[in-house]
Length: 294
Image (cartoon, rainbow, N blue to C red; front, top):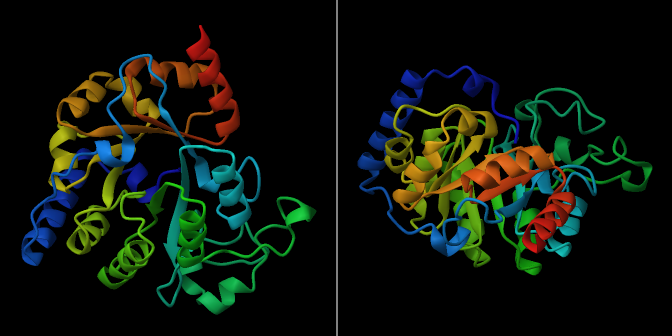
């Protein structure tokens, strides 16, 4: 879950401004921030030392090409708690699974995703650069991903990249609801407006605010956009360890990204984070089992 580049540099003042703008969107839509408990999707708050839930980063990139259906299937069949995938919009407004702004790194194509139509994206090979065994693997649409998630009865964190339009957010909510996944999916974003658009169409789907750094009052920031928790860079938690207790006291959940070593897992678990996003969910699962046996 690599952060958006503008968000990397976003000072606390701009975060507050973005949250204020989102509040105006909600107010204009006549919807107040939902205060539904986070327990339903993410379970009871963890205590320090208790195992966090595991979210396979980018759909399970340790097992298959990132953000592809083979990776998602492998992660879900392996029994990990969640798959975390990235959704971004094509030039014609269709959400597909893609992390980067360009298609260069993960496909045989070039150029910004936002400049390519869905038809152009569908012609790309998203598997050959990972392994010859996955040659011909396509970039999946959000609809295809949700079909797999529903069929395998999985849970997911959807990282909505960039700024979404109200229409795209409404369509995604409709697709989630049509498959009965509203209580199995959490929508996450750096962008407060995008979360507000989702909220105007669903008071059931959980929303998570992604943060690279923590604002002065992280609880107010999360509640201000109707979020049920945050997805936060591990270094921000290290700098503000009391934030986990503050968020838990408000009934919110804390997911840390992207942790890939036992040292990082131990530090996050000691703080009592509720979820861990990792590139190596299998090893984290093994580590947690060892922790439980001690």
